[in-house]
Length: 333
Length: 246
Image 1: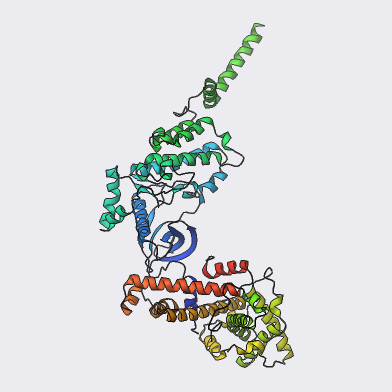
Image 2: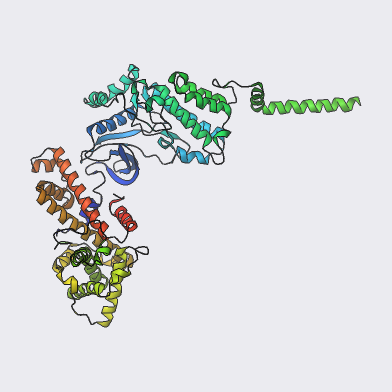
């Protein structure tokens, strides 16, 4: 029987994990396993920093998956925004698996983080930061297509990062933005264009997460997917963020906010907000105590909102009037 | 020797259940598997922990396994209380202490006798292993040592089985590549080097290594499953061995 030295034992124990021999990375623990790949924590030995390494699950994964992972990394590389996780490196491991590294985000997933936020305004402000990142991506011609609590991380200082762009779609109709993404990829690697074009999903492919996926995504109508599909997912996220707090049920979500959710989650894309900026503007207006475009208030609600918005001034004026009345009353007696 | 003879009859069946079987062949195979997995770790452990001379450690090892059968110690094992490995190590400790006190060891065999124990190979391995003598007296380090030796025995046997599988399926090249890259760990050898050496495309080297690793893990997991006292223990052990349950 062959004697196995300690190094061989260690290699065999790690035989199920990616082979990082000859790379600048040393594998640490497994962070998450998704449909397309696995994310590990790794140590960048050159820069002495921790990174997250996303790699295909298997050396025998379909070539389309490898292309999609490369594409995801390249899309991320074009989306330089504080709310989008930055990519550091992309390459192929000795065992043939494609990988990319990105910022190692220490924090909590949105679903875990919102439980710590007591007030609705705090949660809405957090949500608006998610909208900022998505609106930026849309401006660059990129749709996320899988927005859900598990794909949003909140860092220790409250910084929001939109993760997992594996299902992202580059809008073909927005040729300028699409070109921005593709042209720079092409410069890095002549094969890039081929990589991009072969991964565009065809009609009938369902991609997304039930509950957060727009009806057109659920029906596999990929050609109909546009910014309003992400608006749908953001609407579902808003509902989740507004309701998911200890002791608070969705019945307690203010009606204007429910109306915003309803509009953003309308079945027909044409009935939704045109873009994320419009949607976020309505949420901001609600946060500032202003009327929102998707909700017609009754007179009573208008008065209530007016009172809430100008509570201090109204109380001061009331106090002044009461004092004035009392002074006049006692003076005339 | 192999851990369990030519075949691997107790696949997916706990060795503990098979060791109590009325069928002599099944019982023999199970005991072969159990002893094959543990004799080397036990021998090296007793040799180091009790500073026994090679001959005395050999007698202790054979005596321990004979006693395991004579007193039916496996029947007393409770998977809810400990891992089989820990239980056997503690039994070995208890046996060795009694034997050393009594100093009345005699060579014993019984059912264990037909498992050929290559003690000289075990001695050679001990000599080749860089063991820090300063760490040996600590009970934790001896525990770790026993654990590592058990993994070594399990993996060595799995590699042996993989070798046989490659021979029967005509995939000797896969084993040679796996051996050079994972077992021998030749300095700085790359997939490209191996591709050149075996006149294969690099992608084929990827495939061969991936296949060999997958088969190795499958064999190791099957052996591990048979050697565990319960499903819970197996899940824990698999996680500890390969980082996650497979």
